[in-house]
Length: 105
Image (cartoon, rainbow, N blue to C red; front, side, top):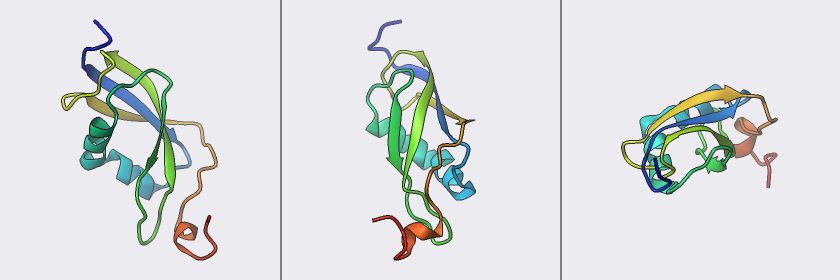
């Protein structure tokens, strides 16, 4: 297996305190497709800061996604399977405050 080969599988973790809405966003097939298109190469331990959008009743800013496992090569391709697991909480900010005047600036 060379470093230029396509990865068969990635395991990506998100923090335990990511809201239910945020989990729904990152686990959608369209978000997995986005990760495949925007990350050419990955390595164990890489942290990807990804903006998942702003919802009407919940939201998240940048979500730190960490690469927990890479099987096969290091190149992310259309056929790469992306699976998720939950890791320790990291005091991620999100929720309605993000959209209000009192939110982060």
